[in-house]
Image (tube, rainbow, N blue to C red):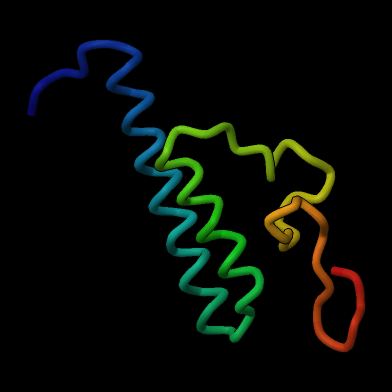
Length: 81
């Protein structure tokens, strides 16, 4: 196995590990029929893969489903999630 050449390689490995963990969380949420949470995790994975800053974890509404306009959506029975 080759030695890692620098921080860039480590960052790529860290990103891969984060993506794998998020994907496992997404699949687990779907298995629990928590589709809103699974979709939010899917969207986060897509953002991370495209290189966008992950604003969902930095905001106070981390993990909450959002519409395209960034507005927190409502869950079942009209309750704000």
